[in-house]
Length: 123
Image (cartoon, rainbow, N blue to C red; front, side, top):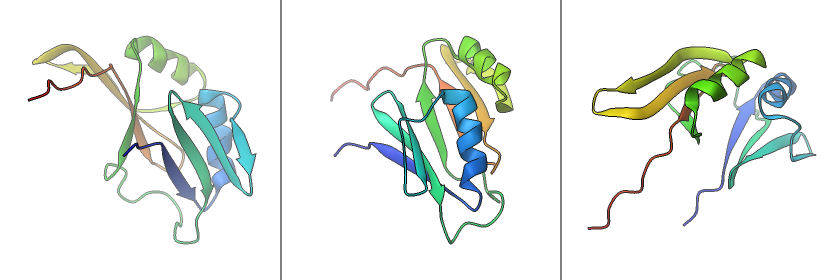
């Protein structure tokens, strides 16, 4: 299997398109009400969904992640573009070189920037 994308449904997808365009640049596609950006090998897509109303009542239920070698610098760039920061970059005692920052979109969907994780050893 290969996970390749996430679809973020919204009652007001245009608001999310404007937000993510500020953060990630011009979308790679926009067709039939759906707009998407390729980030690495995967896509983030925004579109209408008839079962979604208002803001996310449980933003921590699903958090999607973006790897970057320099979390602090990338968060700074995204903040300059208007990103909503939930938690500034932080690390854990057991992983001092592994950084994470939590952000949100206007519908209160959470996503994180994080240091690349090494693959688990085979065993």
